[in-house]
Amino acid sequence: MLRPGACIGILGGGQLGRMLAVAAAGYGLKCCIYCPDAGSPAFDVAAGFIQAPWDDETALARFCERVDVVTYEFENIPAETAAFIAARRPLLPGLKALETSQDRLAEKTFVASLGVGTAPFAAVSSAAELEAALAQIGRPAILKTRRFGYDGKGQTRIDAGDSAGAAFDVIGRQPAILEGFVPFAKEVSVVCARGADGGFVAFDVCENVHRNHILDVTTVPASIAPRTAAKAVEAARRIAQALDYVGVLTVEMFVLADGETLLVNETAPRVHNSGHWTIEGARTSQFQQHVRAICGWPLGDAGRYGRATMTNLIGDDIDAWREILAEPGACLHLYGKAEARKGRKMGHVTRIFPENGL
Ligand code: AMP
Image (cartoon, rainbow, N blue to C red; front, top):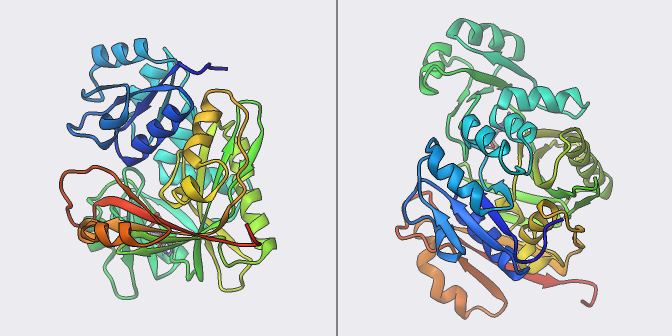
């Protein structure tokens, strides 16, 4: 168990690292951020940072010297970097969780092996294999690169009449996974935490609406039946347990039109955009929860203070910051990014609507 005053190393310097570092500071902990990108949002709020490439072993060794435990705020950490660090300091969540989430095929195979539903899927490594997979899975289908996809990048939909060869070209002829298109009614996520002692705590299920493949609005609780919500949490618990997971884990799922069937789309071995509402909306935020878990501390209460909505500020949405500040009860978060490029997450706003007389 780490003590206040210990130092957490965070791989990645985006807004998730920034909010983790702020939460850690609230518990009297220090953070050191490791990120190759100049001007990373997390650098501004941490006790220290190292700006160096992922393969710079001298810098990585220096980073390990400074920290007591290492975590990450995004899952595309190169495998060699993760192994280098794990040999020197505890890396939490562990390598199994990281490796599983880095490869969509490994991830879906793992989830399905636990008896948790997924879209039908098949491995694809050539245009010929894609033809065979399409014959098996049918159309429409979605072709995704196995690695390095996010926010809809590295994927393309294949409809009736579309050429398989052209679709394989679109994703750069990389190792891929073909998934049956899921005619989902809703997208939800379970943000949960598993402690070093195996304890498990989940926030209420989040309902997520995407715009241009990027999360737009999260509403909590999701408007799904309590039984479906319980099933979603149980699926996440099973995944966390099978990964021997320590930290906050996010599991994104589709809910079908029957309101009952859940299919896991993706797991993220980290805090997640759909959990940002917890900063003001829950008794423990997802960032505090992650810090607690990786420090070997007891997990916090995930109870809600009310109904919550979280709206992302993407690109020039951020221009509305003055109006949002003027709105009573609107909680504005800005990530300190210099340039409001199109599609870039610049901040978010959370609104909490107290329920049950709270
Ligand atoms: P992903 O990159 O896997 O998180 O996918 C991004 C978004 O694409 C999801 O949030 C869904 O809206 C959509 N999507 C991904 N996979 C499927 C699928 N098999 N069927 C239908 N929609 C999907």
